[in-house]
Length: 287
Image (cartoon, rainbow, N blue to C red; front, side, top):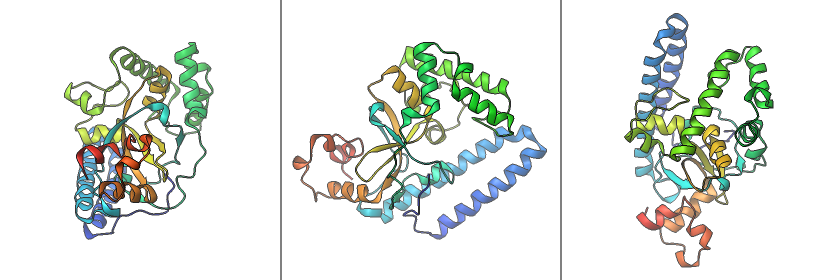
């Protein structure tokens, strides 16, 4: 996500965690080159670091209360997938490092429709019209990038990517036949993910597998991550899915804080604002 800065207060704990992350990346890359079998152990270690970082963000936000109200960095809400129309830019750092952040600037001024991506168009063609994956522009783009030496969607060969496409088919079938479930629900059922490897904790599942959105200054929900599940939800015409809120624009958070603090008359707010997924929890549960 191409953003100019954040509300992080640069505390000693925050700087320490950043140094830990840098060290983990360096050691992990070296270890994987020598011992590829360490991948699972390193993934577990990375998940533990992500949980520690998000614990720090939650604690910091509870004390500092940026922009007037506390922010849960792992907040998951339910939204109509058709409400997510545009997408933000790519991440410049680990996705979880954006969780719970309030960011000013023009990062939310985007005109990048999600449904115009070759990924979504491939899902639409494959699942609605029966077009084989291998006949979609998306498939050919990814295969060309793999041939150029890039790792795409965790794949380094065409055969690996074809297997991943079959796992996407399985994910589609599960959601179609059994409904769209949150990562919390899947963990309670001990259900494996047909696309990704088994996650060790709820935090890791949310960070890696829940559809992630960011909230623009006017409250628009912008797609940030989780294209597989969002595309499937849209193709299936689902009414509601769980999404993880990452970043909030500073203007939106100021408005949200005013609602939480009672500075805005709830009854005077338009119905669609009162029903906004990032406002509803404030009205029902308080800040």
